[in-house]
Length: 192
Image 1: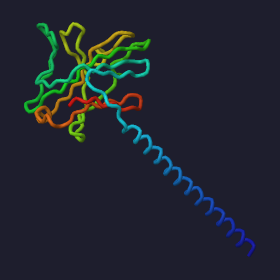
Image 2 (image 1 turned 60 degrees about the vertical axis):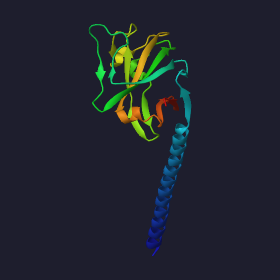
Image 3 (image 1 turned 90 degrees about the horizontal axis):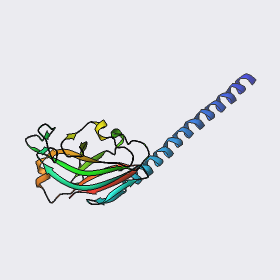
């Protein structure tokens, strides 16, 4: 009988301990979800930027937004006899946001570390932007990361290009925003 009571007490303690751990795990996951929700809501608050303005990321770099245009073919400003160009598909056009990025840091800013962007059309359609650079003399356009490396205190022309349906170019009453996420902040560059 004593063995039975001892076994009963041990099993009750074991079950209570097991349940206590399950509850604490459940509580932890709920609190984690609340933290994730708070981070997401902070990320959604966007800072409005217009063409002609700039964004400065700490002491690392400064992005100046120069102009936005639609084009059937991306090509350099001053092409020479041999240059790279990028034609759009038949029913598409390129939207290009031209920027200048200045490296404010003490080390080379790698092209692979430049801020990425996405185009948001009509507040619901998303397109990832490709980064391109125009050479200093305007004779060529390149897409490779290593062409976009920026030495300290130097600038580089960086174009954010998105191939989109022509409908986006033609529907002038609908909004177009280029969204950048830099250092846990969201910047919306209003293009239209």
